View 1 (cartoon, rainbow, N blue to C red):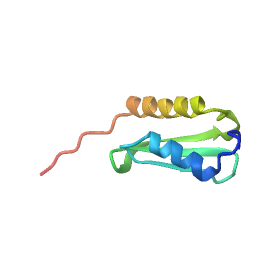
View 2: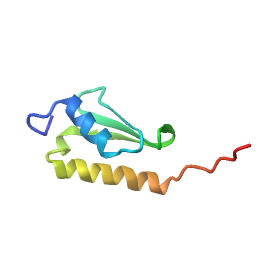
View 3: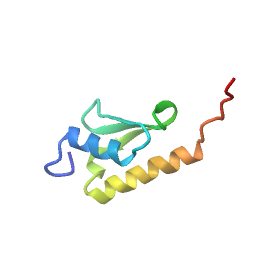
View 4: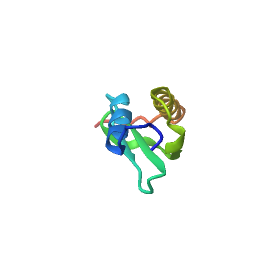
Length: 86
C-alpha cells in the first residue's frame, strides 16, 4: 500500500465515507489495484464502476480526494435514467 501506515480497511473507509451520502463499495481482490462502484443514493444499480485504480498511485490524502472527484465526474457523465412511478 502506498499510503504508509494506512491499512486496506482504512483506505476503503476513507473512500466510501468521502462518497457519502451516495453508496460506494471499494474492493481490492489482487492487492494491487482497486475496483470502486459508486451508486446514486443507496442504490448501486444505476451507478458507475471504476477499475484498475493502482494502489501505488495513492500516495497522499490529496490523491484520495482527486480519486473521489474523478468518481463523481464519471457518474455525472453517465446519469441514471429516470424511472416512472405508478
